[in-house]
Image (tube, rainbow, N blue to C red):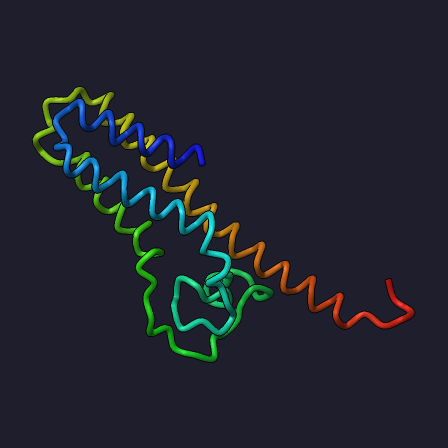
Length: 154
């Protein structure tokens, strides 16, 4: 949640340095929609058999550097989720905007502060997305273990 607040603040600060109201409002709407998706919808879309790469828990939880965390999807990832794409599109747009040449008059430390705030928020939001995957995966595993308990087990 703090990352979303920080990004909204970055948009406001960019506006004070010349970002048009229309672009600022579009960015605010994008981050609001992405936030709503992550908060309320994301977990309901996650599945081990999803054809959307952003919703496939098998694909998203793979760690190629560890033998214990490797798996193969038995399906193609042919679908895209517009709401999940919003997160990536937002960061692409805000990174492009804050580095555009009309802001070249800004002191280096202000630009560095924008970079820091944007990158930190990006890391936090991506960590939030990963957290959603882990919790859904763990909840399903817990449910499966409980479903398979015998009368003499606890």
